[in-house]
Each structure stands twice: as structure tokens, then as C-alpha cells.
Length: 281
Image (cartoon, rainbow, N blue to C red; front, side, top):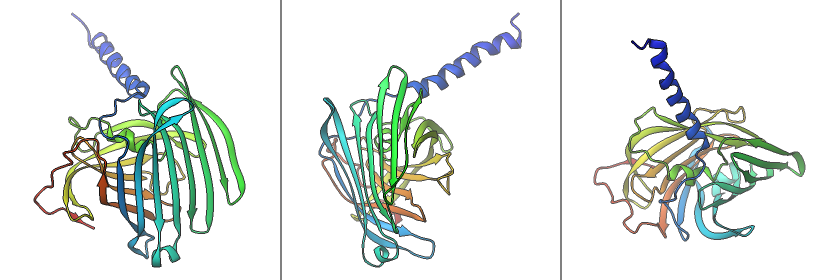
């Protein structure tokens, strides 16, 4: 008769292999987006004492060549204006080159936030199971760091995490389930969890209601005052997985992007509008 300890060994091995498999599986097949996708957003700025529409944003995808490799180039823009812009300026340009396996190659961020101006860059080199990341940041003309870190885990930046989560399989997930990856916060990789929050309906700023997959992203780094929900996103529950809402933590407060218009989707049949009312912004 097999004792309990002997029976537990295969179970532990199975769990260990599954954990390793999640972390080692850096390559994903892209089924969600294509070159030419262009999404327009309205921005809402939340500073605690102020929470109102604040400007415009966009997210675009184009084909690109990165050091001789076929890649995607993603660009996200956040630009505040009017009263919100006078209270707290946000003029950010985030650019990410990712390969056809949805792995990050290069990330840059140029940001005017409040009275601060920063430039950030992270470049990725792959060697077998290892990822080498060179990261540097300049803040208000002063270099803060320029370092190289090496990790054996799949590691993503602020922008490349979006195409990654758009291509995950949520079919068998239940609220409370989560997916572990690594996130590069400044100059160090930290643990990040993509938390599945279930399905709901939201009303976008094009007047349509969409069924969406709700996600929060926990980033275990002291740079985020709200580590549990450092990033939030709602993706259309269809093949395109369009980000209808993106909620991002700023140095102070947060900025929310709500879809206003979209074109160039990979799948022509873009998320049939649901008939019941959604959350109105």
C-alpha cells in the first residue's frame, strides 16, 4: 500500500513543474491585435480633491523593424488639458517594441508629470532562459541610474504588459484567480500578479455598452502607493480584447483612459454591443 508521503511526491512535482512552466513561458501567440490598430481615449484625472475629464489619449500598433527583427511598435499617449492640465500636467509618451512572440525588446517613456520631466529606457536581450535588461532613468536632467539586471523570468514593462494580458486565456479563470509574471520597476524586476476580477458591462465614451474582462495588476514594489491595484484594465470579452478602460497610477493620484473610438481591429466583428446598461463614466 502506498503511503501518504509517497503519494504526495508526484503531486508536489506536478505543482512545481506548473509554476516553472508559467514563469518560463515567455512566448505567446498573438491572436488579439494587428498592425494598424488605433484606439482613442478620453482621460479622467483623479487627484483626490479633483476628479474630472482631463484630456485625450491614444494607443496605436504598427509593424516595425527592431535591429533587423520584425516587431510591433506600440505607442501610448496621455495629454491633459484645460483646468486639469493647469492643476497637474500629464504629457506622457510611452513606446514599446515587442517581438512577434509578445516579448518586450525596448521600452521608452518620456514624461511630464506635475513639475517633473523624466526619460526612462529599458532594453531587453534574450539568451536561452535568461533575460538581460539594461535600465536607465534621467529625472529633471539628473541621471538616477544606469544598470544591467539579469533574470530567468519573463519580465514586462508598463506598456508591453498590455499586449501580454490581451493574449492570455481567461476562459477557465474565476474571480480571485491570478497569473504571475515579473515587472521591471525602474531598475529592478519585481513580482507582478494579473488578477482576474470577472465579467461585467461598461459604457464607453462612444455611447456603446461592452461586455468586458476586468483585471487588476498587483505590483509588489514600494514605488506604488497602491500595490494591490497599481494598474487596472477592462478588455472587451471578444477576440480583439480591446482595452476599453486603462487606469494607471501616477506620482500623485491616477489617470483613467476610457475608449472614445477604435479602428483597425484585427477581427472585423468587434465585440457586439450588449443591450443592458453598463457602468457610465
